[in-house]
Amino acid sequence: MTQQVDERRKSQSKSTDICCWAVSLDLFYTGQVNNLSNHGLFINTTKNVPINSVVTIEFLPPNADKVICVKSKVIWNRKDSTGKNIGIGVEFFDLTDKDKEVISFYLAIIKKKGDNRK
Image (cartoon, rainbow, N blue to C red; front, top):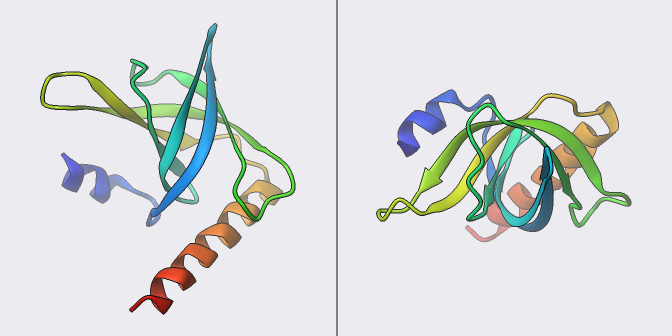
């Protein structure tokens, strides 16, 4: 499954440890952003969020001066071997140009830190 997800990605994702909030209809839940790209993210959460659900994601990258709030669509979810939900993958579809810049800058910082560890 991971290979299929990787092949569908529009851009490379980077590992992160950012807290996020998500709202879907009348549900509110929190999670950790495990992977972030310019086009979406993976949230570690035990909430069952159906594929194609529209969720509003809020998160604050360390380099940002304001919370990024973006409408997203759940494109996949992940379960553990017992069938328990462990996360969702979402694709952004309402990201402002300023928020794109903030995310791109943050991803460049992560990449640089990773390159310096080699």
